[in-house]
Length: 214
Image 1 (cartoon, one colour):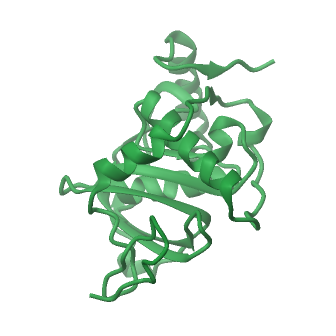
Image 2 (tube, one colour):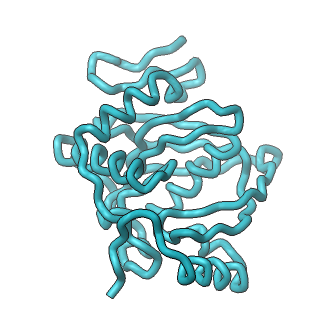
């Protein structure tokens, strides 16, 4: 099995294809992240930070590491499986995840400056499962997405990373990358489906703290 330079704390090993092995010690790593963090309220649809491309991360250091810890704490408090920085009001390209795939394997990690790899047509088998979003609380709608995804980027220390996922985790990788380029999942719905999702949101109370829109 190929390894990254693991002299730095928190750097994940990689497999023979160069993808991070993010399924080992997930519970311990997630708990360690959020123990250093503070939960922040979630921004919701309509907040300007959610509707524009975020800024690239160019500085890797203690401030970014604290942001990542806060993101894990916020994700846990909201019972989410993925969280982008703009979902807690921060205009930077980073997301965290703690998400199972369709085989029940738990994936836990961080991606800065993510880029979704364009897949050839023969690898784009669509999954039309329901999708939800912490920034559109209580609303769900079916959305077709490829059931396999690859994302490239960096970890919170600036090391290059490649992440791949199938099923539910593939959906998570696509969903969170979308966030950092200014797209919510409801932006990919038909007008009728988007209207219905916003109706669901209006009719129900979120189960976690949110930032009210002006």
